[in-house]
Image (tube, rainbow, N blue to C red):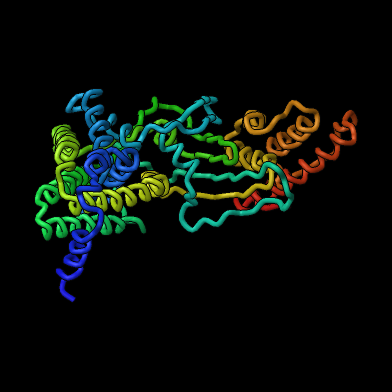
Length: 436
């Protein structure tokens, strides 16, 4: 069967359909369809610098009005020469608030960190060849994951750019591209040159914008700490996850305070071109598509439907793709992960990770993770602090200072001690501190 056969079949079917223009038309629908899927279109555009595929985006897609709005707003909120930070915020590459951070050595507390910390806490990243270690088998209503991230190598910032990377989603745009080409062929076969031009306009406008974005470079900017500051060891705290950061202050700052920027080739002038193309697409398709033939309007809507579905799917995977790409900026730190059965176990692991070598007061770390004012918890925290201060090679519980506890509190204390014992001994074993 020749290439023209399926196209001819489709056009003949459309021509012989009872949905003739005298009884049915898509004038209004074809005009306003471009205003759907704006958020998904922006999300799909934000993935272009992460993929770096120059052929992505060459399809007629809805939501160009949202892209135009974000690009115009970026230009209005910044100058041509200082657009990079505003653009990364507009596209969602930066701007999300991260969790609370507590620096164990300096005592600094940040109620909110920046985007890279948010990505680190919410991603499924486990480091390279890192299998989580299960600590204690007790069933608890508050299990937690604790990740220890050691920055052995410098986190690159400034002129260092994030290299494009592929993913299992990077070939998906082939489908809407092929659909838009077929739609153009059908319009040409029914001699609806107006609809053909409008579909081509969408393909060229979206393609140029995606091409420019795919050549963009993502960089990480950080504040340079003062000379003589202590190491930036500390912890990121979320509801069910604790991430210990250990390393130089400047490397930890890259996670907690770093700003991501998107720099385009040609600078702000290429951004101005993208905004103009998106606005032109909105205006012309809105005005002229209602004058297309029924087959042409159907092909136009089909191209929007397929490309909109593609953008929607990519936007749903945006966090996964973005996190796997942005975490490569950390320059492959050493990672150790513990699946703690309870918050108490996680608190002991955090204390050992931050206090064993640094001399940081363990109680300062404990009180940020668990309640230590209730009598059972307070007695338990004293045992933990005493063991770490004495640098015991295994957890020792003398059983004293419990005479004022009732039976319920003693039962709770025993469970907490079991958790502490399991976490303590596991950490000692993993870090080659021999148990005697």
